[in-house]
Image (cartoon, rainbow, N blue to C red; front, side):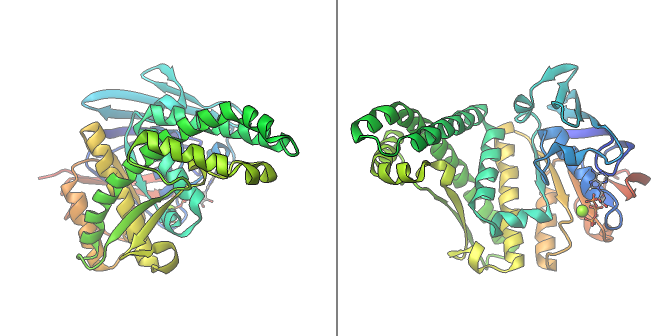
Length: 379
Ligand code: ATP
Ligand code: MG
């Protein structure tokens, strides 16, 4: 089982110094608005992934009155105790230590499976393609170090190729082809790998997401996912490469005029459809939230499959916007999922939670401090 046993937070968001012990099964973080509930979940997520689910700028995470933040957690993984320590000082590099050994934040990314659902996840459905590409890239990188390396290499090649394209305007076509060919070869090969990994993940997310979504809507609605690629990919890897290569050749003139690469996975999108219609354009707020939650719960099963165990689940304010039926289905899911779960809420939900597990802990947050810790041992 994966679980976080304890956490020490220093100088993170509105926390100055806080020590916490958690229940291995269920933890309820309660308190009024703007007290630090989401901040606490964010610190747990950061400890596991070295990233926030709210911002890409680590500076924002440092308490306004402090020079640095420090997080220390005791994380159990397959019954082994791991101590994770992370510190960040403004304008300096992040330091990560696992069991007293320094590790890179990229190596840390795949180690401690955790899934978060927050109100901002609805942006996954509502916003433009780049947020969904980021979602796919992060999920794939957390599952596979190879994907992460390929993505970094692809982005480097893309940058260099774009720089070259800007210098080619007005040159003869033979020279242009000679100069571009080596870049094209690497771009095509890395890009096709990226496409294939994304498609594999999307298929899995669709399969699992469908089940969750249909349960949430009592089988009245259905969700489907489609990889919207700028290169028509094929099941056969070499064929995708060939198509990608031909598309690049065709796009030569446009690319030189624009000074940038106009085909490839850096432009692709994940299409999310509800009952066959593009959810970005047609679905209601509640449908969008259900779709986003389904993607996240599909991610839970993806991690469970990869790691043979349940990831930690963080649910920020999840009960506030769903109708009763949807709430009940979510509770069923959480009861059947045996992993550790943290649920933040500004409203009283004790009556709901009893149905997930009789063994839980409530942590009240007030102005960046935890108080009134109440433990409820199971029967
Ligand atoms: P809600 O129920 O409204 O979602 P919350 O309890 O989840 O509230 P948080 O998002 O955790 O609230 O934020 C609590 C407070 O932390 C906010 O008032 C915010 O201004 C403050 N805060 C955010 N970043 C920092 C920071 N870097 N330093 C100090 N305080 C911060
Ligand atoms: Mg909040």
